[in-house]
Every structure is written in structure tokens, then in C-alpha cells.
Length: 268
Image (cartoon, rainbow, N blue to C red; front, top):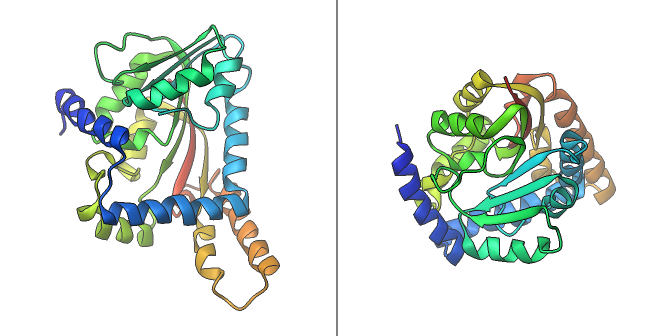
């Protein structure tokens, strides 16, 4: 099992990767598929908009809350919103270049700060967070036990974690990821959630709500090749997304067919 020291050393390589953005050809292709194809699907079906709206609901009234924006690079879609509305906002990321850009976005907010620091480093001493917002971050840690312990350590009593991460539990997605992984530039810190990850998180935190996306609706990209009108295709895609959204809230079986997960959990 990877030690904290090994994680810290690996994160130095991860920092260089995100600072330089150098990717080999297979990773560039996968990034294109993920960022272009999936991004377009999420936009067309309203997946991203609905997920961000849900996150805002989960965040609630931030007026008296201390929030950690974990692994946010130059800021995610809600970073400035959180910074402007929380009692205290702290953002951290490995990339000093990303943090430099975020600082410019939040420089007008006296209660907001941003640091280029490793979450596991002793240099990161901030604690007692009411909210940890981790968009696309938690799956970057190989040792889930160490991650869970660190998250628990940083949370205030009753604090919550809001995450959005990829799942590897769907069979076709698992096959594609397995074939691609040997050629992946960032494989060393890419660990999409599996059943064991969810069990470990659930052991320490209470799952308050889950919403999976791109379950049945992940086949929307294939459906577009069928000889139907665009209106009919989008209607099918939105219906499939609604099914994913609603069923994943109550059915773990359906949740595990999804490609990505919205997760709200609370410190026990």
C-alpha cells in the first residue's frame, strides 16, 4: 500500500504534469474524448448544469462556514461563488501556476486565500473545515485509507464533503480504461472509484446523497449515429439522464452503471 511519503513524492511529478500540461498521444486522445465528447454530451443533456446546481444546494448557506476548495487548479466552476459567499475560503492545489491564476480571480475577497501546497504536506496546517469541496479530485489518491484519514482530520465535527469523481464500475467503461491505462501519462494518480473505494469512504463518512450521471445516458453518443431527428435523439438522451439521476439516488446497483458520481457525505 502506498505510504504518505510515497504519495508526497508522486505529487511532485503530478505538480510538474499540471504545470507543463505535457501529455503523450494516447492521453491527448483520451483527453479529447473526455473533454470534448463527454463535455458536449453533459452540456446537451444538462448534466453539468444540474450537477453544479445540486452542489450549490448541498453547500447551502455559506455565511458562517469555513470552506476548503481542494485541488481546484485555477478555480472550478463554483470557486469564485464559494469564495464570495463563505465566511472563510481556502483553496489549495499542487500547481503554483494554477493558484497564481486563481489568486487574481479572488483578490477582491478579503476572506479568501489560495495556496500551492500538497494536501498531505505538513505545511498545510489549516483545519476545522465545515465544507471540503473536491471537484474531480478524490480519485487522484491511490491509498484511499490515507485519504479518508486526512479528510476526516481536516473536517470540523459534522462537516461535509462534496465530490464529483469518475466511477470504474460500469463494465464497458472498465474495459476501455483497462486498455488505455498502460499508455496513460497521468496513470500514477488516476484511480476512478470502484466498489472498494465507496465502501472505505462509507465506513468513515455518512453518505447523505448520491447522484450518478452517464449511466444509461452514456450511450447517447452512439444513439446519435441512428437515423433519427436531432430532436428525437436529444429527447431520448434527456430521458435517459433523468433516469440515471433519479434511480442513482436510491439504487446502488444503478449508481454503479454510471460513469461519474456526485457525492455528498458527512463526518460521523
